[in-house]
Amino acid sequence: MRLKLFLSLLVFFISHAMQAQKNPILPDFHADPEILYAEQTGKYYIYSTTDGYPGWGGWTFSVFSSSDLKKWTDEGVVLDVKSELVPWANGNAWAPCIIERKQNDGTYKYYFYFSANNPQSKRKEISCAISNSPTGPFQPLDKPIITDADRPMGLRGGQAIDVDVFHDPVSGKYYLYWGNGFMAGVELNDDMISIRQETKVNLTPQGGTLDTWSYREGAYVFYRKGTYYFLWSVDDTGSPNYHVCYATSSSPLGPLNIDSEHYMVIKQNPKKEIYGTAHNSVLQIPNKDKWYIVYHRINKDFINGGKGVPGTHREVCIDRMKFDAKGHIRQVCPTK
Image 1 (tube, one colour):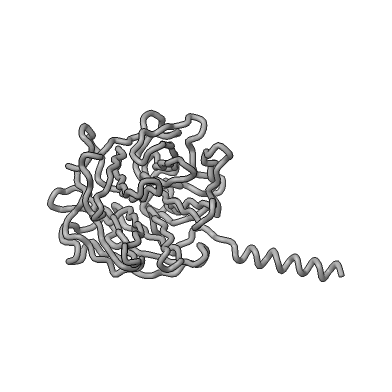
Image 2 (tube, rainbow, N blue to C red):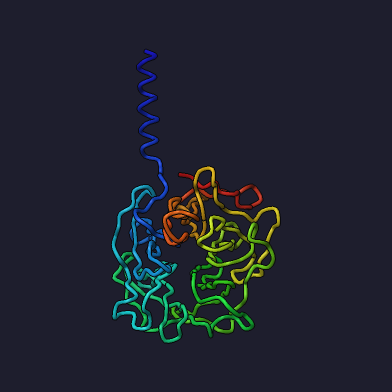
């Protein structure tokens, strides 16, 4: 009887372990993951920077789908910035974001924002591609919608990269955030491809150090229980120290409030050979107060002193993200 019970428990735990999520969740090298739950299909999607190229020189964006956040299916390339469909760009396809918008007639549109290199300006710029399906085909605009000229007045340096799009559930408005070395925020017009210039603000978090919350890039915004959470990445994407911090606000355009005791979201764990855990997106399970952070880390074989330049061989991971009773994000422990 005891042996039968033991065997039953053993089968249960083995089965449970086999079903558990394993990091990384995507094959090969991918970075800057953007996760979307699509109401139209009832599935989850991850869009990424294609990694593994010298100088972060990838030129395609791929999408992966899942019904359970465990098994992911490669749905193929959704956009090639070297194609004739994107005449203004020639490579460096970086850090996409996407949003699903339900139309008045009940159909859905997907707005896919991305940055790429513009050889004319010799700068990274941001544009948008539109589809009726989360897996495409996407029809890109023939020009950028965000350039250096669109940064808030007084800001210098950095690039127009790392775009994030946010739908405010309170006002119903849509917002765009971007910047490397700065965090800019602006309200989108109803067409979703142009910005309300008069709403532009400089949201760059102030203070901090490379060990704490000194802002670098990768802004991401979400809303929970009356609070707007602003997440960003600290340090260089090639550094093992690359990590995520956060601030809160009562508005989608700030100002931001940093709690000096509660600001860390996720950081490296060298003892487990987990490095450079940053550039994230956030997922709320529909109709539940259950949250996940999706981020990339540097493959341990390509860390400083490894096989190649650190930061160009990154892999996508997912972990639970929880809050305390006061709404602070509890620091996430990155897992394997």
